[in-house]
Amino acid sequence: MRNIYLIFRRDFLGYVKAWGFWLSLAAVPLFLVIGAGFGYFAASSSPVRYYAVVEPSGVIAGAIEAEFARSEARAAAETAALAADMQVEVSSDQVAAATPRKFIQVAAPATTIEDLRPYLLGEKTVAGPDGDKALFAAFLLTEGGGALQYWSTDVNVTTLQYAAETAMRDLGRRDALLAAGLSADFLKHVDGAALPVTAFRLRSEAEPADGGSEVTMADKAPAIVAGALAYFLWLMVFSIIQYLLMGTIEERSNKIFDTLLTSVKLPELLAGKLLAVFAVTSTMMLSWGLFAGAGSAIAASQSPAMMEMIDPFIAAATNPGLIIPALVSFMLGYVLYGAIFMALGSLCDTIQEAQTLLSPMMILLMLPMFAIFIAFNDPGSPVIDYASWVPLFTPFLLILRIPQDPPLWEILAQMGLMAVTTALIVWGATKVYRAGAVHGAGIGDLVGMVKSAMGMKPKAVKE
Image 1 (spheres, one colour):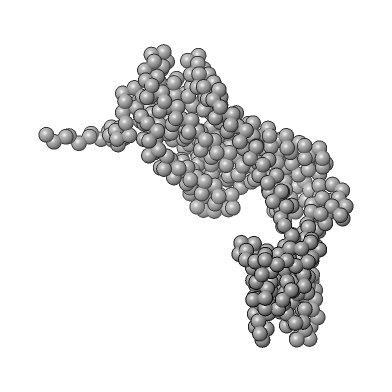
Image 2: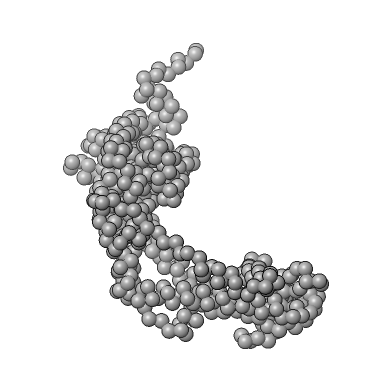
């Protein structure tokens, strides 16, 4: 154990003393803060744009304006409802400030596209509530009223165009209802009379039904926590590639293995290195988790209702029925993939050789990620049931299946299969690592080592 500890301490301190580790540690929370601030700044600093509608009756202009008014009313209602759920008092002015008008209709300075061209190109300006500006877009009704043309120099901002399309559909429905002798609000009355659909969960007799049978966040929290744990495992496995490959290549090229193996046994060396990389990645994940927890605590202190939203997730994360299988899957999955990557890294002399292994490693890691996406959307899918028996997928999918209450024998059988597979992988990785680190074997010798491990004799070389 002392030798394992010494290897662990040597590698762990070597990683955490590097500037790259601290930059990686600070990058995620820093980018989250910058990204959130940038998104808020981009939304709040979006410029006010003027548009004009050229049509004789003014009905289309009124319909487009009414569509923007409905969108603003919906956004204001959602903001007020969210504030009420979080027990935060907001005034009507604050709600209005959160949903500012970005498109303002102005009087058309001309009636043809040729005369409107200088206003759309910014050569001339039009007066409006936000001062004199160029015309962002113009709507022109064609002769005969068969189509509404949308003209603008910016083809990327489509909010105004989509609002006009929605307004035209609503206008067409209204005209059709009136032509049929029905009121313009007929469809709204029909929608209002529709029966609401409320989700309920059928509970077993042994399961407590706190809060009734209606589906709440407490029912959804276990699946969300399981998905977070599965993704967390995938992220840790993805993170170890760089550390294991680069560290192993450096030690092999500098002949450090020869010195280390004079003092410790090879299994002790492997165990110490895996523990060191696990500690490094765990330190990063724990730091990010503390950052997220601190943010949640600050939000909860500002809003008492926020704690009520967090409680179901805390309860799910501390449920032994979920956390124990998740931890077993977590540890076995980490050791399984770590042993594979470390063994392959021991066969490389240069970074160029390691890069040839990155593509198959990326494919190997993307397969579990695809399975995680499928399982998160439909954990009861037969595809997930079958895929969870594949040892490379089991660590991730078993975690996601736990909230669905699979049979106990399946859980135990899959954990046993993971344990046996991990033991075989570690055994094979030790052989490969010895061949690469001690005897200098390369990537080209990997096929021969596999055949030798399977008891197959290599072909004799013809003279």
